[in-house]
Image 1 (cartoon, rainbow, N blue to C red):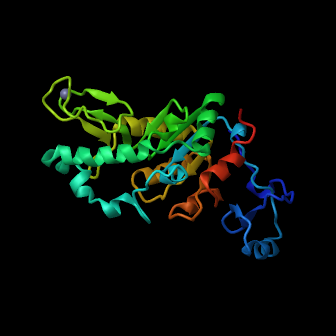
Image 2 (image 1 turned 180 degrees about the horizontal axis):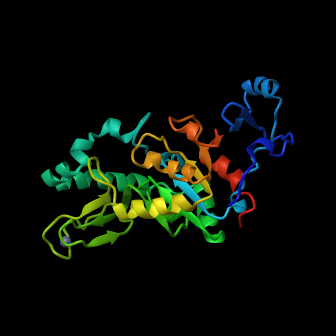
Image 3 (image 1 turned 30 degrees about the horizontal axis):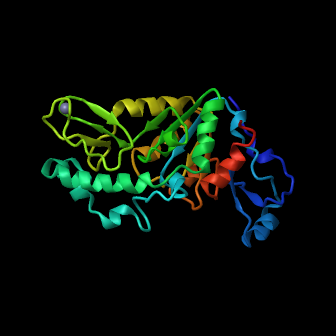
Length: 287
Ligand SMILES: [Zn+2]
């Protein structure tokens, strides 16, 4: 297992201007674009380091743990926060089992609206980096809270989708499934049993996560030596606690998010930058 010596990384000054700020009390390192603050930071800690000395190619078992912030650069609408979709649409009417039982066509209208919105977006450079890592490094797992399918669009082949997928449907009567990128999806009645409506294979409000997916994700996380969390808010449970499994086994944890999150303290390294900026650094040298 690779161990990264956070306190003794390279200390070259770099025009690319991201600065490591060591907090001696916590052993934590924070990096971000240079700001006015940074001169004060350098003065205080007397420490200027290169962008980052962590490179994915130096690790054996890597997990990319991804959330909405990864797809923000693709223009995929977010669900929470400023302009979040749940501010406009009441999930109790459109995204829970009770709503589906009551009025499946209204729920499908909403999901088709989402399919159309997301269908106009495409993957970004960060998704592409992750797919390239998976193709060229021996053990790269992707655990995603996103339902937008952007990882696969970028070429990733194995994605543990904790919250399901906007592009998959299932029949809870006979177990039939579909996987396509139709927008709109108009095969609403199950073609296998013709008894039920297909439902979006998404974890709706009030649903449990798929235990099989969770088990696979946890298994990957527990054996990783590097976990890179990208664009997750850390407020959606149980996904939010998953990086802790890696922490417990001694992996190096990197958080990529422009803003601090409620779980930032858990991470050894925090990169305060966009997903693309961070992966340009972290994935350097990957084919
Ligand atoms: Zn069926």
